[in-house]
Amino acid sequence: MSQLNLHLKVWRQNGSQPGHFQDIDAPDIPDHASFLEMMDIVNERLISKGEDPVAFDHDCREGICGMCSMQINGVPHGPEKATTTCQLHMRKFRTGDTIWVEPFRARAFPVLKDLMIDRSAFDRIQQAGGFVTVRTGAPQDANALPIGKEVADSAMDAAECIGCGACVAACKNASAMLFVSAKAGQLNSLPQGQPEKDRRTLGMVRQMDKEGFGNCTNQYECEAACPKEISVRWITKLNRDYAVAAVKDAFGNTRKEAGGGD
Amino acid sequence: MSAVFDSLSRFYASSIGKKILVALTGLVLIGFVLGHMIGNLLIFVGRDAINEYGHLLQTALHGGGVWIARIGLLTAVVIHIVATISLTRANRAARLAQYGKHKAQVSSKSSRTMIWSGLTILAFIVYHLLHFTVHAGNDYGTYKTTLDGHTVHDVYRMVIAGFSWAPASIFYIIAMLLLSSHLSHGFSSLFQTLGVATDKSEPLFKKLGYAFAGLILVGNCSIPIAILFFHYGR
Image (cartoon, each protein chain N blue to C red):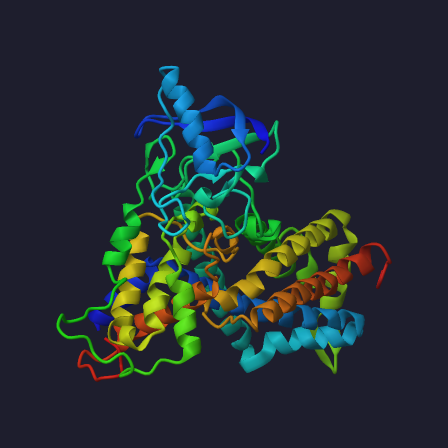
């Protein structure tokens, strides 16, 4: 095990007050520590010196909860592809490195403190249609609804989205299209999602716009930053589903038929 | 009736709705840019070829054709610009505090400067129309020649005269560089926005976009370069 001597530039901010970068030296960091463990060590030292520790989001620390965030050296979740901040190891850095650590920046993700941001805008988008309405009661037989293996696999790819917000952080426009397209697309590509497909698509996009996210300019920085490698083809699908839903919304019949969506 | 308008205004108010309009009008403008270039390259076929083409455009549908095209193109340009400016403003507002350090991983410089290449092209279109359509500050409108016994506008002489002045030619070449930058992102981008790109077709759209941008650059710049630097027609 070797030790790293690092220099951090960490964003410090209290609520809506203006923030600033604080220079923090981080000597003797074990190279097998994760990035969050490195932050823990830094915080322990700050606390023992009587200083305010750096607030940051974290939960499962195994790459599946979507809680950890941090813009590390200008890239969400740091330099490793398909890796969350908690799974990023310090051996990916060299001794003497200066590391910039910032919150994910978007108007729709206000900073609560330091590196902690409020991502409840994502929850409200989900509430606007990112679900399938089911009646409670006995579940139907597992094989009653045939779904092709390829379709199930694709839906599973979209379902991998952990809602961390890296797509928003990476986008020059702070657009949430990758998140919204994965959440809508996952359900829109399955038979269970068909009855509410149009309502879901219109509702989620409307909420996304309302939250103040930017617009997609097809540059695919989101896909490159996504720790779950969600494909931008889900955005293609959202664009297509939205166009169809909007046309039906404008010109479609109010009287509905089965198979025609809603 | 008003239910339809409500839905359509919601469509335009939405991010994706505006983007779809930008993509559709972009497609119209791509078609125009290609047709315009092919027509203009007739200058290399000869004086009569381009003059006949100009005469055809002016007289199609008893002179109405050119106005239908102008109104259609103006509508497309206005929608394309108004919607993109509105989208860009929303994009700027979506991130108020900037990163101390930000690294673009995959996006091209062209894709990140679309609004600037686009607005410069707008300035160019205004200059281009004043230069060769309105004939502001020049007497190109008085250039006449005879073609099959008719007196027609001498487009050939106008183009040669227009590009013999170095500042105009250089501005045209700069504008075409920016247009090709704009197209290198815009061409493939529109298939994504219209929801038709797939894993298999997207790389093809991307290559087609680069090829199209290159074709427009070479084709359009060949005219001022030939006239200014190689004295074609002078």
